[in-house]
Image (cartoon, rainbow, N blue to C red; front, side, top):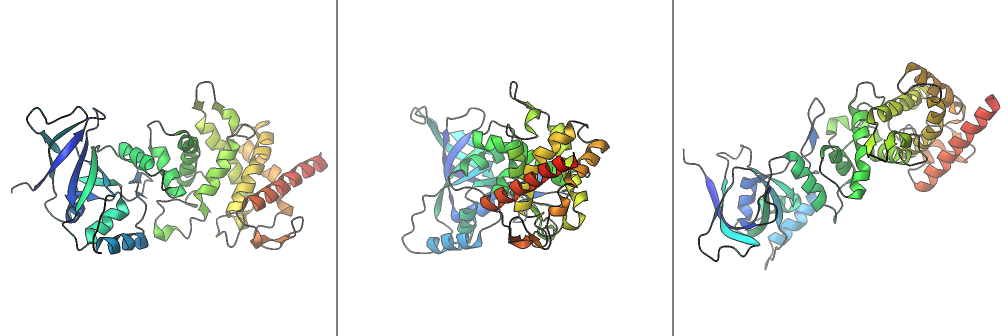
Length: 380
């Protein structure tokens, strides 16, 4: 059988000698044959695949309506990750290069059937590519930039970088960060450790949060049981990693290392104690329990910094003694909490009117911390 090869005139951009970069054009109808969308998902073992968010149908519809209109100008290009099997044949002659780019022909082997895997992946322009695949202008030339990288880590790294102007959904970014091992911008780098920890809490068998965290890869039939939004827990961990937090001492600022295993043990110790202290409020929908709501996770996260300071002074992280001590500390506030019914009398607020806003998070966390210290003083 003769191999089906797509040949296009292209410029090879002399940018990174280790990662070939090409600029070329494809017809709108060819994009679906060349490139696929790497949807974010996890397998049964919890391994993360892909990086792309779901299709935005309204956005695709708007692009398609424009493409099917008159006098179309579509300068918005696509970025593709190309396979190592592509071949570039530079043109001969003294004028084939100017030192910045080289003109030639790019050859891309196409799949033998529509159901076979495409050779390339779309790194940027997913919604545009879906519209282009459906337009009646199947011959419309579309600008493409393609870099050769079959390594999924390189693709994810570029995906995060090119989507900084139009921000990606927060839960998609935070779930991808642990899988990127190249140097990241400062803002993204600060979120990587909390994201690693939240992924572990959602996957590990000994975690009270196992299967309860709603992430970008959470499949539809699991979303009803994934009652905790990952961004709430990530924000709580971020705060605790700051100088005033219980997790900060486990970051070595002099050499940049982190005692991740110890931090994980602290989180599991504390949140397991929370689960055991409030069993009726744990693992249910935020509409039925404000403990599982963003306001509850964030407020209890701030209380953790006070509770675990006390616990870690007398017990090792992850030990049965630490778990029992954490439960004893939380028992001091338990009678004053109204996660599933009643009112918070000190706040003059019904339980289900607390919202995930800075004001409510601050008010509730201050109340819990005040009650905790007052109860400890009285107990002494």
